[in-house]
Length: 273
Image (cartoon, rainbow, N blue to C red; front, side, top):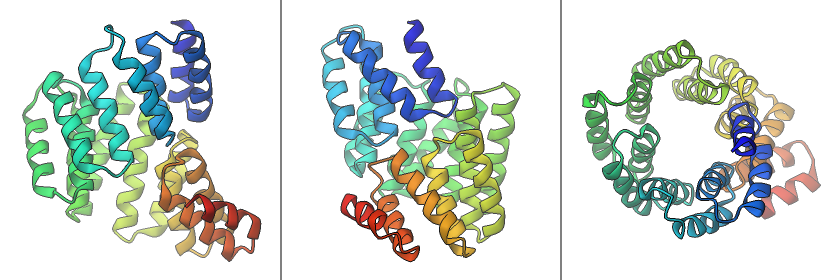
């Protein structure tokens, strides 16, 4: 338990790849420990090691101590990262039906609907979240911000994400959780065409949590639009390394390397793409 706690603390403190390596070791030491397998699968999925995540989940399924809703949530996470929106929705609906109080599953389900370009279903999920007093206010605001951003209501999205950030900071949430919402704020500024503000906020996000792959990805966009070719290359490279399943990150990493005449890097990135 202590070693698992160290691995999870590493993730919460901004070292997702270090946490993944530590959890790999723990799986080797305790291959029948359901909680270790689930946490290893979760971090594998977040960092884009999807085949390994699926292997861990198959192992975890054989452990009676693992709650079925957790398995469904993590399968949904993997399917979402694999761009399989319909599969993700099916698994996440099961997770939510079994454990409605799990905010992570509720947010992932909204993400899955939006990935499938089904804004109406996402709005219905949001309405249910806003009516559910068992969920924390930060979950409600994060859900609201996602849906508002999808529909192009950038000011409303920024307001919701700002409230979520304040709530997380008030309860002294781990740096990873705060950085994730700061990343959403930066993305909303970017979508609103506020490139300089987006760059400022996204830099703040990766300072809080250097393993925020999405923040690095959007920072790459922002740096590129402001002519920061070397900075864009560094940001896209970080995004690709931190989430190896993100094909777009590998593509833009390769494009930025070409622009900077880094031929070896460009070839490596575009081969991964």
